[in-house]
Length: 500
Image 1 (spheres, rainbow, N blue to C red):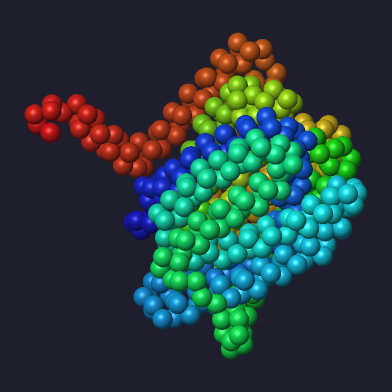
Image 2: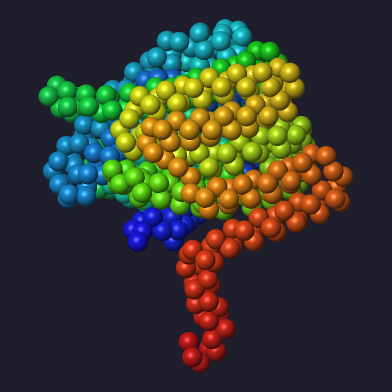
């Protein structure tokens, strides 16, 4: 019999908790992107993307993976109730986070001329990259505080902070762009990052007041293991950020920031609004997978259950999203961004493939096999850069979309093959059948959207969406308690008032 933490009910519960917050986040992102598009247009959004990718790249280069490597140790100490050891470890995390944050800020300022030349093709924006350096500091600082919340399993507090942060950053973005227009790009990036950092810092200091030990060499030496454990993870993150930066810089230099803005909008359409489905992966799924230990059967079951849930949610979502793209793009951005629809259609498979392989890709991290994880990430990033750049070179945004889908298909095949031999992973037959059925329906919807006239396109899209929802409902009905909960809700709603 499966343990409770492998049940569909458990997975859906935590996907719902964190995914519910992501709904608020996405709603705020929709409003934020809409006003950003109206105030600064595709060119301005391209500049925002260039600055953001640069800050993430420098941050990932200089933070040594502390935010990732600290979580497991924090969780162990918290589970054992060792308050004093927990206080010392949090002090250690904050000390090293502060050091690496300062290092990252200075690195960004020092390399500002290089970043300006490589990403925008001139030195005229060097001052902008210098002014961006505090954002690198805050992103690294924020990573340390988020690690504390995750390690202490303060999931509800994380959810509340995320919701408030989404609303506050949206308000700040609209206000600043309204007042400053294109000149508000850097103020928006800095103020929204600062607001998010302060909210998370308030959440962590409620339990553990902020303390560092920069003068204690003995304390700082104890942080060596965090840097060692996080090295492979951060190298993988560095490769990913570097890949994104290469693509962004390539489009900016061969075309213009306007083209980068369109590419960024298309990428956001594909990724950002579907990420609520992946919200529970780090906070809930990774600890469960790590806890399976050497139990191969339980490990494979954990992975396949997670894939089932992601596919049953992702299939209907992507079909409906594709069907309403002509309405959503002007609503989310403006009519200037209608050019991204063909790219989004070609790249929609990107997110479906990710739903299948993402649970598998956590295996080396759960097994402590950091070099295998790093090698697979390096392989993917190489294919990702080459396929997207080649696609954009030959077919523009449409080619970039096809390149994204191809890169994730390659990663799905590579990860499932390598980890089958390395860790004994295998797909369950029912999981493969569910994924194949949902992808067949998604493919039919994508082809109809791309090639058919509006009326038959709507007909095919409606039919495939209905069938996709029916397949997902079948799994929910047979494998979860959702029908029982719906019956209880129905009884409460239909019960006469005098019986309530």
